[in-house]
Image 1 (tube, rainbow, N blue to C red):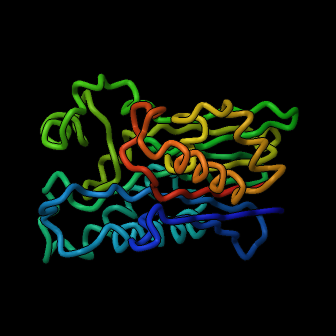
Image 2 (cartoon, rainbow, N blue to C red):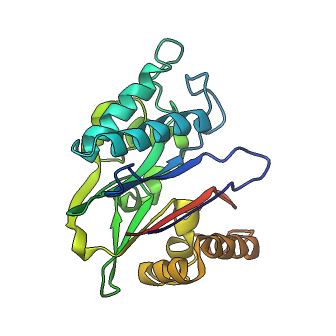
Length: 263
């Protein structure tokens, strides 16, 4: 089995808010992949004493443990338990009802000899390659479907869309959000490899239009995850003024994470 993880901060002077892990049970049967993209809050209060990296480390650590140690628990239940555990760690010191309480996008995948389960919440991506080379992107595209006018300001987003019906959902403080995730189960024999990308890495497809999801997956498989991140950084530098920017390009450089696994 080949696995590869690359995670690079958008700004070397700021902590990386992403999280990535691959868990392999001691039995050698199956495994799991966890990728989180911490949501950078706007300037101002969040109601929380803790940083986004603190949150993603707690939530990601809980998900890594639960997806490996409880293979019979559905991924939605694992995410719900992980959110509840993380929330309990700071409920007494922080206002978890604040719309900008620390939060993250989520990609989970777990495989066994029989099946591959997946879960996607918000705008990170999971790419699945079949034995014949076909690549399928599993996405939660609710944020991408929203009109730009609705996303004009942070205040509008927080009041009307963030973790609200008709808007989009992230893993924050409410365990019930796990039920909002995009999920599925695939036959194990139909999956050759997986790649999870935060939106800082998927800019290669979604922002700069350098290729489609199949091209992106093949680049990672053939040249490595670091090559994808390096190419995104080059494109960002060449487009420093945002002349080619599309919806979703909020920062010149974003944290970029790629997790790849050949099953």
